[in-house]
Amino acid sequence: AAELNILDGVTSTAAELNILDGVTSTAAELNLLDGVSATTAEINYLDGVTSSIQTQLGNVGGGAWVVLSTVTASNSATVDVETTLDGTYDDYVVMISGVRPATDGAFLQLRTKVGGSYPSGNNYKGSQATMSNDSASISVEKDETNNILLARGVGNASNECVRMQVHISKPSSTGLQKPIYGMGAGVRGDGVSMMYFCNGMYYSAATAVTGLRFFFNSGNISVGTFRLYGVAKS
Image (tube, rainbow, N blue to C red; front, top):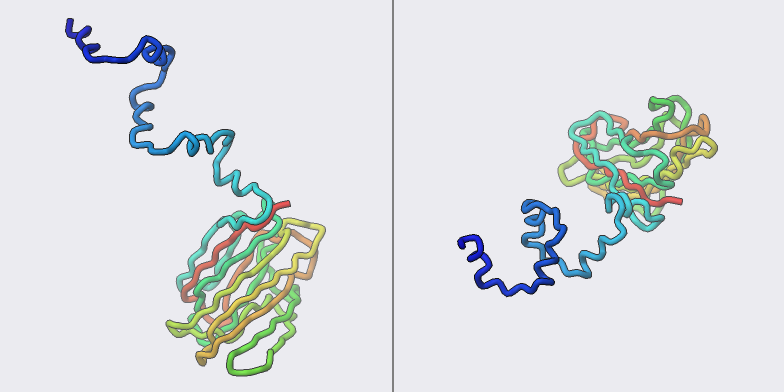
């Protein structure tokens, strides 16, 4: 009688009760729906999803910047951006944010990783242009040294830093040279605002680039963030 009384007040039809026929979900599985406020239309957005949504978004050609890795400097001699710098994307961008040298007036520089190391020597070619707000002229410097020059004379005061975007295309190609270019702004050691435009490349051979190393010509990288983005696919 107690078991039959459980049905007391039930107004379901036979058809409604038959919906339970064949249900194999556990109470725990059904409880996953507890509190769900999505509409039918919203749930239907998932129709056809066959893998990680982030992965599918990353596979969309062009137009989407996907954060691949982040390195935060803290009195670092160098910052190496290597993780996921491969052939997944055609174009990559490193966003440099709030980077400040430990030494006043230092130059921010770059080397590329090839063959498992970051070669120096006279393997880099490039140029760099700087414009300041205290001069009407643009200073241009040819750069054929042991690295690629990104920014000159960055200040080390607590309110000084450099911010840049550094672009590289098809780093995994072994048939193409990999020109790198960058642009950004910073504050010089005397408090003057600066604009930077630069380009360069590892010139020794058309070999794959698997990493980018950032460092100052004098002293460590006191603070700053380096974020690697995948930008475009074929």
